[in-house]
Image (tube, helix red, strand yellow):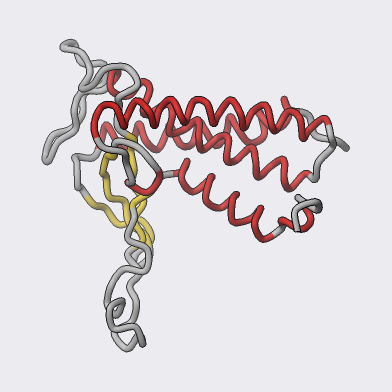
Length: 202
């Protein structure tokens, strides 16, 4: 049974996007900046931060950098959607189509934050909860909102680790969200299966 673009949208895009936004909305309205709560003890915690741009807290500086990043995301989302549509018509492997759609959902998830969060939320602060639809207006203009991140691995390298510069430090310090995970896991999956998914590229 072949996959259609509409099936990919309803099976992957909509659920991932909905989960991403649900978690972000919950964190944004119930956590103050920097607040931490255990999630999987010893492995994963919830820690609310906001960043101005890319995955795992990376960003381009200034208003211009923020706008450029948002434009890049929008263009990338359109290109990904067009590419998926083309690969669907070519009856590409299902694993590739699902992976690409996860990447698409992740890209759109972070676009929503950048595009609208600045207008629909008040500013989050240390010890201050963000207000939903504040009467005084949001904390930033359209397309200049901050991306909400919340998942933080707390696993550390053992003290006996051969590389002394890493001993006792976190294995993966960046804080991330559902959208970041959807993109990263899918890209890794496609790299592991590139010979099957992209036979012409060897």
